[in-house]
Length: 615
Image (cartoon, rainbow, N blue to C red; front, side):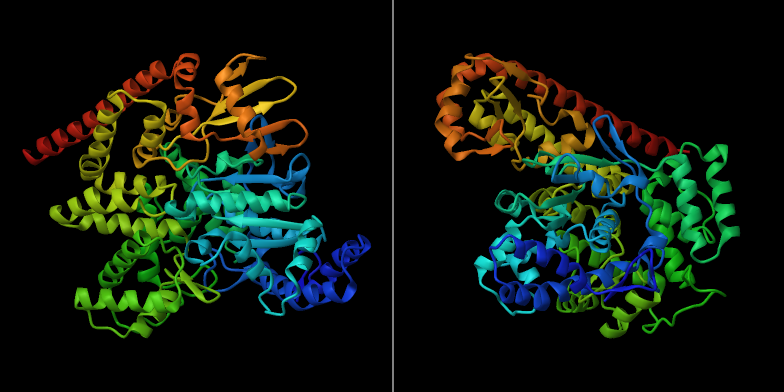
């Protein structure tokens, strides 16, 4: 059972929410009452009660020891779509006024998951839709497709109605599906899982759908979906965020001191870091021990680590309370263990881990580092004493995925040169950190290990890529080399075509180019709209042949991604109309410029180091 966020004395069991939708569905005459009773009363109600209690009383980065009420700590950032800005006060179901399908794109720590929790709670308490949360990372190791996983989530009581009943209920359009963490899908699964998600959306299109992702994971290109981007905090929002969080623990004086530091004129160039809710939370947590604003992102993470292992306190604890350190390990040993665990788990694509994985990995680290500690005591220290691993249901995870990336980047920096070469030239290109959207991890590597990161990882990949582009490139070779695709949208009324990137998996070279210059990733831009009427015969032939396999958006548009074989069939005309050769040449020159700039940066840094060594 759960409490309404605005009326804490009123208890609302999930069955009350479900009764409203049960009656609506029964009015449709498709399902008999005893069938829907089994589905709702025995399956959905337990899922919703558990999920609501998990969200309504929540732990956050600042409040890891004791749960707080969600709406005491929730601070929604602004969302932007084109010229439209959705303010914090209006982030609710007004998002769905014009479209049932939304993506929320935001950097690490921008508040995407908190916003998903908010939409769940709004939907639940206001009886708007039946909210279902799907954490997409769980699909990486799931032996089945997306629809199977969603069915499993909804039918966790194992009291199974017929599949047809569940299908008819889902077709009623009474659900809100919240798909969290598109960027956490492994790259080698991305294409298949994306196709399955889009098939599920097409099949049950009357429902509402939201997908969250970091930038660069191609969620922006999902068919049907409108893209909203999470904005950085403004100056006034930073002020309100600090005040709100510290009001929870009655720390008004601390709030005032923090805001004075933020407003100092000599900090104005670094306040940009605090426009991210996660980094701002880190600054609040560490302020008593580190009252100066860090000049780099990695320093935020180190300050958090040092504060937690040194002070062992929490904002919610008064009087400098300290947890017992059961293992007796020194801070340096704890840090070393976390670095290796972050490295191992990140390269295996594990962002949350069950007890077995956690225990076995710690045993391996203990053996390799020749340390003496009890595994269960270490798990207690990591989850309770220093709170750098948190327990979420039956899983363990870092307080935020970016901590995992920080410890991994720190480990790589500390390696000897031969080991670094192995990581940068073999492991990192091959694994590519499993999931997409690696910019936060790469940024940390740039801060901590810039010269070796660029010389051993970035430049070899870009130079090899450039050499391949210089050769005679057909459309097929270009698509295979870059991972780009061609998406054609045909408007029946205007007879026009939009040429743009598909959701194809980009190559690691393209991901690196996007990291250094975000506008380089697609030489045939979305703005190229062709008003042809009866021109561009090759595209029209492709469309005519394949439109039976495409689908309708509203009443006006068909969308298809033609095969490479079909493009090759019309290559001469396509190349001529699109000036593909010229665009690839321009693309190549742009890459040369980026390589030159990066090389110069490394050489200048080396010269600075040498000159300082000679002092």
